[in-house]
Image 1 (cartoon, rainbow, N blue to C red):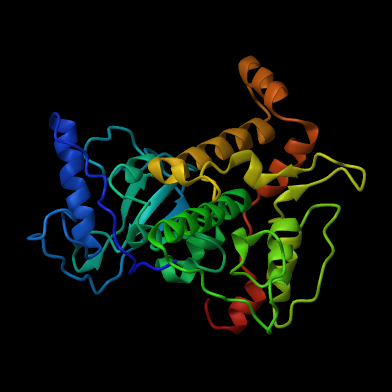
Image 2: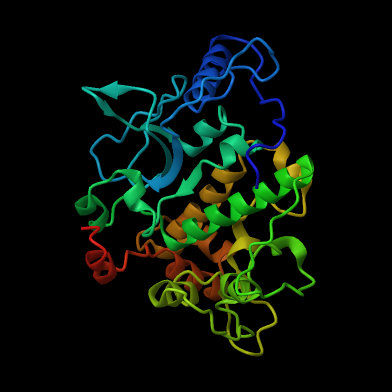
Length: 328
């Protein structure tokens, strides 16, 4: 994906009432913060590059008594513990010289961030065991199990970003880069992921299936490969005779790489995470209401429940390697 590709007009809401005015101003403020012109349709609107390069971190809200205030002024709901949220880091305000993060509900942030533009999408980063050092978090907070995404949300966010990025590139006429490694060429008929080493792609998309055949991937971290083969595997199977295997992306991913109209919806990320989070509760909770029990029985098969419980786990860092690397 190329963030320098032609920028399409941002979906700045039309002025209709006080709330719309707030959304318009919040949209302009965010664009300024990431170094874009306030209004891409106005030639006189000048962009000022931001040397801080703010990132949009997808993470889990940590424990707190009242939750955190959503940065969108028109939102009256707090971001509660265990909710998925977006942290803009560094944020737009500083306190005593410290640049704080701005926190948003995912759906609220989608109202002001146009993810159909690469300039916004490229800044999205799921907070995982590998990326937490770049989020400026204390290691003690992360090791307590806070902030990091569960396995399902991690895979869904990354696949959402890849799918939307592919649609943007196709719309803007950007050719996919050949990032294959070790001289391996992709001879697969599935050209939707043709920028990946086919052996690595096999691991990413086929792990968990009874048809998955592990292959050697030179120089790949053993710890990470084990996670991708087990906890992070997107498939769940009942065995070789299973002709209806469960797949994480088929079940929850709202933005589809083969559907250009996915770019027309602002809320594909929040919808994906909402559907996933709802089923995590149904599959893992031991105190469901009668209505919840009925919903669980109607929507989740035993195979789905097994898969969701596995993917609801939060993959933690390889502590031994982290200590050796001096990150603690």
